[in-house]
Image (cartoon, rainbow, N blue to C red; front, side):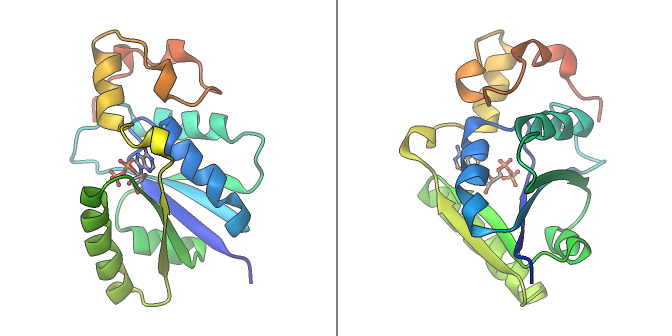
Length: 163
Ligand code: ADP
């Protein structure tokens, strides 16, 4: 059976930290589906279509990676995609506590699915989408923290979502 992992997140935007987690997980799985989660009642910074487009751009030469958007529970998306694994990244002990609760609840809801965690590379520990958004919002150079395959000109505040 194919080993399929879902990498869920808001990815608002997708950073070098996220990119690194997917790349390092590639040898472990046959397929990784990056799931861009959204909530139509909650405002995001970048529209979900742009977030999906950018992540597809990052992995355009990697046939094992696909990108989809999803509104709702990650475990429901796992069932839809026939995925057995949820991939997440850990930066800090705060991440651990948050991820532990989600993973244990997911396990209760859908016992066949295992959550798999990769520790961040030390240099990516401080990289968060929130900080990257702030840099973009205030006209700073966010290119240090965004995947090199992306065109920085697209990361303008004009991208601000109306969602
Ligand atoms: P969410 O809104 O679900 O927290 P994020 O887009 O913030 O989604 O993050 C998705 C996943 O990537 C989470 O598991 C998060 O811990 C992980 N992650 C975020 N930033 C980094 C980073 N710099 N290094 C490693 N993992 C990260």
